Length: 112
Image (cartoon, rainbow, N blue to C red; front, top):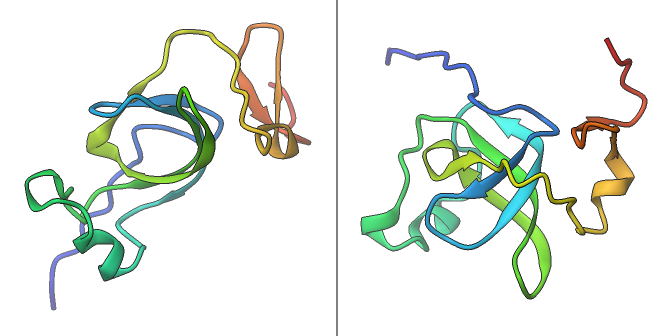
């Protein structure tokens, strides 16, 4: 039996992040503790850029200069976005509210 390592995700739901290599940013709306997409998707990434599967992967409402979309990104390819700029992705408002500090929280979540 193989060893399983539980890793805590570095980023959380509602956090705004940027891709380390590509010019896009987004808000995390779900987290997989390890890779949970198709092998076809993983193999479509150029081998020299292909991320490890044994790390958290994040579902993002993402946007770049041209468009908005959904992205699936490995933890190793994300960094916090500290710009404070609001997101324009149309799905953000379905799940999140932005508070006065500029942080996003899930709709219906209790503020502590």
